[in-house]
Image (cartoon, rainbow, N blue to C red):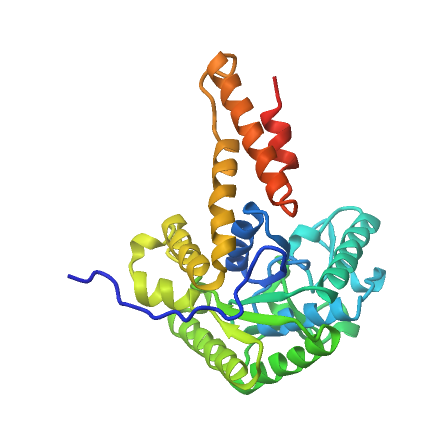
Length: 332
């Protein structure tokens, strides 16, 4: 008896491998993939603008990295005792204006340099809904500005619009060409976030996701070096059960994300890298070990054994960085 709808996932060709530089950008589900890659010591840069949901915000951010845009005081606004920009996640907000700009521009510079030599951009789109400042916003010079994060500003400041399929295609098409001119050997992988945007309503959430899916498949069919991974379908059509969601019934829970990550590694990462990942997993699992009796000889032996394993693995694969793990295992 089958308990899951079977889904055929084509092997990514060429696959992701150790040594690749991977930029991840988009919704919160991006960070599930990104955090797993980071944990396994892949070379990654994740969401230099913070979490982004809609295609307009994602494409704007990628173009800003290409152009190495420098943010200035005119890009900031002050709300709820914090300085922030309409293009960044609240993780960049702060009470000190100069520190906010310094943090943002440091991220811009890092993203510009990383993207120049990146092998992959993994884009996870979450919603077709885009927000713009309207006539009710206090800054008349920024009316019609596309907003990536509303920062708990009054709702009447914004116009909410579901982008059409044609508008999303135009955004992604232009962004693709800008990226390829900047870095000709770059490859792009798209995913659609399985997070349900229930505040938009169930019907409009489904319409929103459908537009993203159609637009992305148009791009993948049109351009070489673009690929699609079915993270959305794995949760919605394969797991398709509320026991795979958190208590908010919107975000996939740990078993669901672990399932998607398992399928991602099987389909998208080359076999030699999978073997290295298995070896790295042993080290990071040991690093997370919480001893009941840290002063025992047994625990000291545990630390010494895994120090030697991490050191040997680092020597075997010089591109792996076990600095944190070696520091932990060397404690007395």
